[in-house]
Amino acid sequence: MNKKTISDVEPEWLRGRTVVVRSDLNVPLASGEVANDQRIKASLPSLVLLREAGARIVLLSHLGRPSGMVQPESSLAPVGHRLGELLGCPVHLIRHPEPGDRQVPFEEIPTEDVILLENTRFLQGEKENDGALANSWAELGVLFVNDAFGTAHRAHASTAGLANAMIARGHEAVAGLLMARELRFLEESLRMPERPFIAIIGGAKISSKIGVISSLLPRVDRLLIGGAMANTFFRALGLDTGSSLVEEGCVDLARSLLEEGGERLVLPMDCVVASELSEHAETREVARTAVTGEDKILDIGPKSRRSFADMIARSRSIVWNGPMGVFEIDAFAEGTVEVARAVAEACDRGSLGVLGGGDSASAAERAGVSERLTHISTGGGASLELLAGVPLPGVDALTNRG
Ligand code: ADP
Ligand code: MG
Figure 1 (cartoon, rainbow, N blue to C red):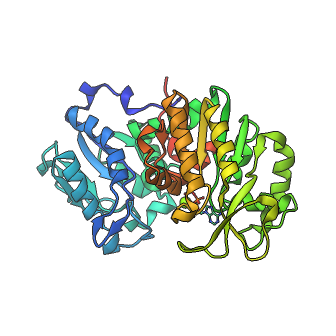
Figure 2 (figure 1 turned 90 degrees about the vertical axis):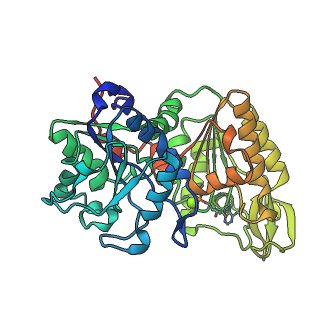
Figure 3 (figure 1 turned 180 degrees about the horizontal axis):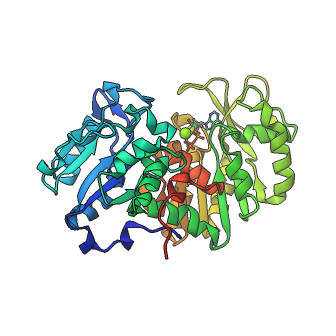
């Protein structure tokens, strides 16, 4: 990567200096508590590194979508509480200093405690990437660490804006450890992948992943399609998809991808169908040519699972994004679970297996294979854009190396 990271900064230099850190602490809350602390845990390595080096941390994050006004239910208070437990130190939640407001007595807070500023999205200028707001944050420290991979695809005041403002003040803006790790696996290792290189793309909609499919198709040896998006490809082949989810507006696109991909683009041969999306629905396993009427395609069938697993087993590099079916319901989870297991087994044998997408990450968790995969991305949207070859503003704005 041509961007500086926190590892490029001398630990001795950090002692006693104030570092502004942007993490992605956008976690789900339930009745005022953190319901899933994965993103907080993923942010710890950079914070631990800085604390151990003796730096003072001023931490920024967004939470939810309060769009420019204070919404008490989107306060970072529960996040700060959980972060304090995980770090084993006090975390002081502080409302934002207004531009020009020098009231906040940070000096009274011990250096080794963490100063957490309230939700960046409570402020008008955050999403507009307001320069004055970015500068008011840059004033607080002498180094910016952007560790918020999950929002790297957006140019907001606390991400790209803050990096620019810090650099304009003669300081540096560097990638945090999580950001660096995400970039290493999603970008660098896939630029020159060990072959065979295979991509597995699933999930609900082709339209949301068209960029990734088009970008990966010329680079991979095989691109396997599952999930509801396979239905749109079936339609492009002229097959009956019954009552399945199809993106009518994308059928032509699917047809041209089939032409472009040739043998490299692999569709399921069979499917699990049911007439309703429910736990108790009566299910059938049918060839993709035998779907009709009330049938809804809700998972890939057993033949497809076997052939997908075989292709995964023969690969050295694997990118996976999107479940193969409605894995939230047991009756339609098997395709996703078998793919998850096959990727995990390939990783056990030394292949590179990278997973992106929020629902896919839950699916891997559900299949019990999370620990075995090389890397699970913490950023759904950002990982898709990176795989599609779209530059990320939050990364672009960082200080160049060398
Ligand atoms: P990710 O978050 O991993 O990128 P997506 O958000 O694109 O994945 O898609 C996940 C959703 O797709 C899941 O909620 C799943 O139930 C749904 N899905 C997968 N296959 C089908 C299908 N055949 N029919 C309807 N929904 C499906
Ligand atoms: Mg999703």
